[in-house]
Length: 123
Image (tube, rainbow, N blue to C red):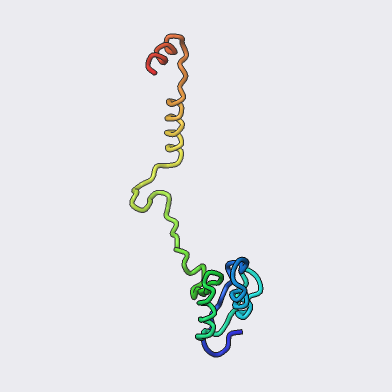
């Protein structure tokens, strides 16, 4: 549909219900048929003037020049022994053992009545 010269893409974003009949005619003259419909029109003063009359009902769609994957950063997988700025990392088994030990200390239950009484007086 693009001919020689610049074109502009226009999207209908808001219903014309509740607005003047002239504004609905402007949407019709732009070639918009339903909400979220996108049309391509020549970028000239006439088209820009029609858009300026109904800026609350339409928006100009800006085409992105780059592809979506071009903006994705690259990631590098490092060996397990070193990390960026962290130095040597501990093996996974040692970390799991430390977590289990800390968890068992936090959930220790007093076994005797004397320990229970001491526990309640501390709180």
